[in-house]
Image 1 (cartoon, one colour):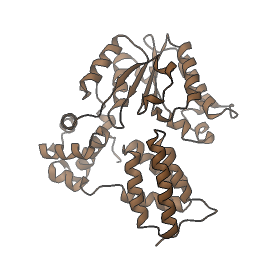
Image 2 (cartoon, rainbow, N blue to C red; image 1 turned 135 degrees about the vertical axis):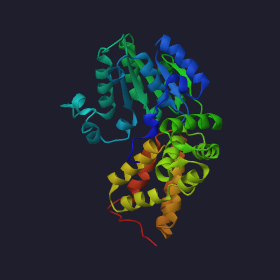
Image 3 (cartoon, helix red, strand yellow; image 1 turned 90 degrees about the vertical axis):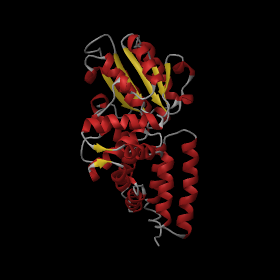
Image 4 (cartoon, rainbow, N blue to C red; image 1 turned 120 degrees about the vertical axis):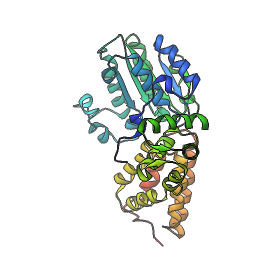
Length: 341
C-alpha cells in the first residue's frame, strides 16, 4: 500500500483498545509506572497498547518513548546492524562488538538518557520471541541500574522464554486476540473516521478475514477501501476473496533461487511485519507455490527443510530466522537453483 497504513493512522488510545482487561491494566500502570511484560498472539494489539500507554504517560513521547525491535539485532548480520541509521551513531568505532554486546550497548546508551519531559522514559523491546538468555542477563543489569528513570516494556509471544529475574521485575499484561465482535467494532470506528462507505456484512467479512489478527483485519479493510472504494460485502469479497500469499511467494521464490537473497528476505519481512502474516501461513503458502515451480528431488528437499522450519517455529524461536534459512537454501550458488518444471 502506498497510502499511510490505517494501523498507524488510527493507532488507538487506551480507551479504544478492544480488550477491557488490557485497558484496566494500563490504567493502573499509567498511574504507577512499572516495568511490563506484554504478551499475546501476533496481531492482538500488544505494540498498539504500549504505544497508547506511552502517549498517555509522556508529554513528549517522540523523545521519551523508544522502540527497539529485537529482530533488528538478532535476525540480522553485524554489518546490517552497524549500517542501520537508528544504531550507527551508537556503534561508531565499535566494530569488534558481538551482536549481543551491540544491542546491550545501544540499550545502555538509551537507558542512560535523561527524560526530556516528566520523570522517566519508556523503552519497548518489541518482537522479543528470540531474545537470548545471555542478552536477558545483560538486560537485567541495565534494568537494575536505571530503574529510577527508565520504564522497560517487553512485548513477546513467548513469555515463558524470559528468565525468572526478568519476570520478577515486570508486571505481566496478557493481551488476548480480539473477538470477532470486538474486531468489527474497531473496523467500524476506522471506516467511519475515513468516511468510507461500508455495510455490516462487509465489516463481518473483513473481521473473519482477520481471524483474530486485528492488524490483518484493519489492513484488509484498507485494501477493500482503496481497491473497491468501499467496505461492503461485495467490495470486501472482490478485494480479499481471492487474496492470498501465492503471488507474493512466487516472486520471493524467484528472487531466492535466482540468488537475490536480500530482496527475497526484504519481501519476507514485509509479509511478516507489515502485512502481519503468521510464519505458519507463509510456510504453507510457500509450499503451495513451490509445488508448481519445482519437481523431483528439489521439491522433496524443500519439503524436508520445510519440516525443520515448522519444527523450529513451533519451538517459539523467530519465524523470520527459520523462513530466511529456507530461502537461503534455495539461493546457494554452489548448488545452483533448483530444477524447474
